[in-house]
Length: 148
Image 1: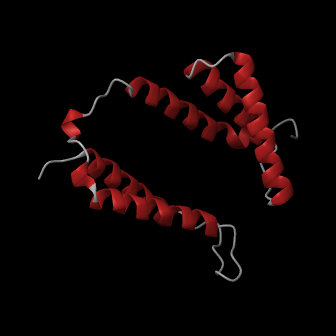
Image 2: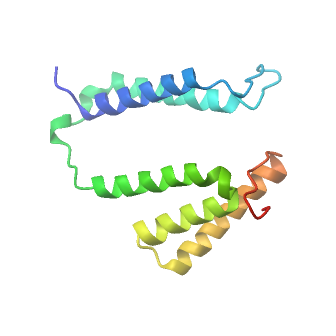
Protein backbone atom coordinates (compact mmCIF):
# COMPACT_ATOMS: atom_id res chain seq x y z
CA UNK A 1 0.00 0.00 0.00
CA UNK A 2 1.26 3.47 -0.91
CA UNK A 3 0.98 6.04 1.87
CA UNK A 4 -0.97 8.99 0.48
CA UNK A 5 -1.48 12.56 1.70
CA UNK A 6 -5.08 11.97 2.70
CA UNK A 7 -4.03 8.93 4.74
CA UNK A 8 -1.76 11.15 6.82
CA UNK A 9 -4.14 14.11 7.10
CA UNK A 10 -7.19 11.95 7.80
CA UNK A 11 -5.32 9.92 10.40
CA UNK A 12 -3.98 12.99 12.18
CA UNK A 13 -7.38 14.71 12.20
CA UNK A 14 -9.12 11.58 13.45
CA UNK A 15 -6.52 11.15 16.22
CA UNK A 16 -6.86 14.81 17.24
CA UNK A 17 -10.67 14.53 17.34
CA UNK A 18 -10.57 11.36 19.46
CA UNK A 19 -7.89 12.68 21.83
CA UNK A 20 -9.71 16.01 22.23
CA UNK A 21 -12.95 14.17 22.99
CA UNK A 22 -11.19 12.01 25.59
CA UNK A 23 -9.53 15.04 27.20
CA UNK A 24 -12.67 17.18 27.22
CA UNK A 25 -15.51 17.04 29.65
CA UNK A 26 -15.19 20.29 31.57
CA UNK A 27 -18.43 21.63 30.14
CA UNK A 28 -21.70 19.70 30.46
CA UNK A 29 -23.11 18.58 27.11
CA UNK A 30 -26.70 18.46 28.34
CA UNK A 31 -29.27 16.72 26.17
CA UNK A 32 -30.55 17.28 22.65
CA UNK A 33 -33.69 18.87 24.11
CA UNK A 34 -31.70 21.09 26.45
CA UNK A 35 -28.13 21.42 25.16
CA UNK A 36 -25.42 22.58 27.49
CA UNK A 37 -22.32 24.64 26.71
CA UNK A 38 -20.34 21.49 25.87
CA UNK A 39 -22.71 20.36 23.12
CA UNK A 40 -21.24 22.47 20.32
CA UNK A 41 -17.65 21.28 20.88
CA UNK A 42 -18.88 17.67 20.77
CA UNK A 43 -20.75 18.35 17.54
CA UNK A 44 -17.62 19.97 16.06
CA UNK A 45 -15.49 16.99 17.11
CA UNK A 46 -18.00 14.59 15.56
CA UNK A 47 -17.90 16.56 12.30
CA UNK A 48 -14.08 16.55 12.30
CA UNK A 49 -14.05 12.80 12.92
CA UNK A 50 -16.62 12.25 10.17
CA UNK A 51 -14.69 14.29 7.59
CA UNK A 52 -11.39 12.69 8.66
CA UNK A 53 -12.95 9.27 8.12
CA UNK A 54 -14.17 10.35 4.68
CA UNK A 55 -10.61 11.44 3.84
CA UNK A 56 -9.29 8.06 4.91
CA UNK A 57 -11.86 6.20 2.82
CA UNK A 58 -11.13 8.22 -0.34
CA UNK A 59 -7.35 8.53 0.25
CA UNK A 60 -6.41 6.38 -2.75
CA UNK A 61 -7.36 9.31 -4.99
CA UNK A 62 -4.81 11.68 -3.42
CA UNK A 63 -1.14 12.02 -4.45
CA UNK A 64 1.48 9.93 -2.66
CA UNK A 65 2.79 11.44 0.57
CA UNK A 66 6.38 11.13 -0.68
CA UNK A 67 5.62 13.67 -3.44
CA UNK A 68 4.55 16.38 -0.99
CA UNK A 69 6.00 19.83 -1.70
CA UNK A 70 7.19 21.29 1.62
CA UNK A 71 8.02 24.77 0.29
CA UNK A 72 5.12 26.37 2.20
CA UNK A 73 6.18 24.86 5.54
CA UNK A 74 7.69 28.12 6.95
CA UNK A 75 4.41 29.91 6.28
CA UNK A 76 2.41 27.15 7.97
CA UNK A 77 4.73 27.17 10.98
CA UNK A 78 4.47 30.95 11.39
CA UNK A 79 0.65 30.83 11.32
CA UNK A 80 0.70 27.95 13.81
CA UNK A 81 3.03 29.88 16.14
CA UNK A 82 0.68 32.89 15.96
CA UNK A 83 -2.29 30.66 16.88
CA UNK A 84 -0.41 29.09 19.80
CA UNK A 85 0.54 32.55 21.09
CA UNK A 86 -3.09 33.67 20.83
CA UNK A 87 -4.21 30.62 22.78
CA UNK A 88 -1.66 31.35 25.50
CA UNK A 89 -2.63 35.03 25.72
CA UNK A 90 -6.42 34.62 25.41
CA UNK A 91 -7.16 34.45 29.15
CA UNK A 92 -4.55 36.95 30.42
CA UNK A 93 -5.18 39.62 27.76
CA UNK A 94 -8.85 38.97 27.07
CA UNK A 95 -10.78 38.44 23.86
CA UNK A 96 -10.51 41.89 22.30
CA UNK A 97 -6.78 42.46 22.66
CA UNK A 98 -5.86 38.90 21.72
CA UNK A 99 -8.06 38.72 18.63
CA UNK A 100 -7.05 42.19 17.42
CA UNK A 101 -3.38 41.25 17.79
CA UNK A 102 -3.82 37.83 16.18
CA UNK A 103 -5.80 38.93 13.14
CA UNK A 104 -3.88 42.12 12.45
CA UNK A 105 -0.54 40.45 13.16
CA UNK A 106 -1.15 37.49 10.86
CA UNK A 107 -2.44 39.71 8.08
CA UNK A 108 0.22 42.43 8.33
CA UNK A 109 3.30 40.42 9.30
CA UNK A 110 2.75 37.01 7.73
CA UNK A 111 0.40 37.68 4.80
CA UNK A 112 1.95 41.09 3.99
CA UNK A 113 -1.38 42.93 3.80
CA UNK A 114 -1.16 46.71 4.13
CA UNK A 115 -1.22 47.56 7.86
CA UNK A 116 -4.24 49.84 7.60
CA UNK A 117 -6.23 47.14 5.77
CA UNK A 118 -5.18 44.56 8.35
CA UNK A 119 -6.28 46.88 11.17
CA UNK A 120 -9.66 47.64 9.58
CA UNK A 121 -10.30 43.95 8.93
CA UNK A 122 -9.19 42.97 12.45
CA UNK A 123 -11.44 45.62 14.02
CA UNK A 124 -14.46 44.55 11.94
CA UNK A 125 -14.02 40.84 12.58
CA UNK A 126 -13.19 41.20 16.28
CA UNK A 127 -16.00 43.59 17.18
CA UNK A 128 -18.48 41.75 14.94
CA UNK A 129 -17.61 38.49 16.67
CA UNK A 130 -17.84 40.11 20.10
CA UNK A 131 -21.26 41.51 19.24
CA UNK A 132 -22.43 38.12 18.01
CA UNK A 133 -21.09 36.20 21.01
CA UNK A 134 -22.06 38.59 23.80
CA UNK A 135 -25.31 40.08 22.50
CA UNK A 136 -26.96 37.40 20.43
CA UNK A 137 -25.51 34.26 22.02
CA UNK A 138 -25.05 35.74 25.52
CA UNK A 139 -21.68 34.03 25.86
CA UNK A 140 -19.19 35.52 28.32
CA UNK A 141 -15.75 36.38 26.96
CA UNK A 142 -12.50 36.87 28.91
CA UNK A 143 -12.19 40.54 29.88
CA UNK A 144 -8.42 40.92 30.23
CA UNK A 145 -6.51 43.29 32.51
CA UNK A 146 -8.23 46.47 31.28
CA UNK A 147 -11.80 45.27 31.79
CA UNK A 148 -12.77 44.98 28.13
